[in-house]
Length: 264
Figure 1: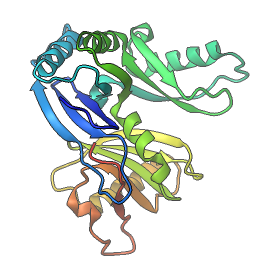
Figure 2: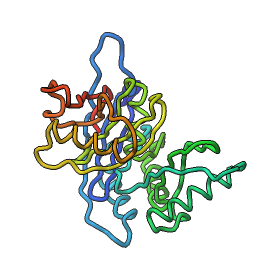
Figure 3: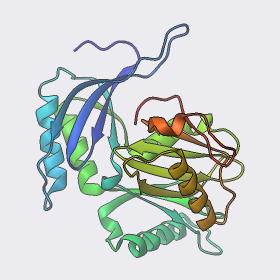
């Protein structure tokens, strides 16, 4: 398959399916942005004992139908496969080992799992709280082997939320919160007052028929729990329900807009 300048593969990985998309990295002046094109997808039979192997087998099956040798690839992992949490650095932390230990202890406390089985990355900070993300080492190894076998060049392996946040964060307005909408799930990120960092991240199921009133009540409740002011705006990445994007019918409603950057 021929590759134009700036094109790469984005492979969405979830426990139940994988999907391969062709994505344009650049937008040329005077031209409309090109939407990602789905090239192929594959359902995955559930495997509680060896989920990484099941995902790898599905990837080999779907990539075997495509002539993508030599393409750069970015793997985007669903929230079900990853972990994300907030870490408070210990008082007097002076070494990276102190921060890593704090992250591992918090991880084990929240999820009850062995940290050694996960690859942890974070915006390490010895002064203020920071967020960490973890991906199973077995899954990382499986993805790298598949990429090597299929002669792909791995550019990134990221949790879905991290990928969306990195794409969208610079487009956030002052006073706005960020949301990722994907498969009836709203991953809500409360931003710090300066708009540069995250205060909290929560995944919330979107009920059937959720309208702007539901959204406003949800945002106000989350702000109350965090002892924060409610946001003046929610900016979302992904396919937000149409009812959220309509003009507010009262001043009490919190408006919602869609960020440029493509579907989740």
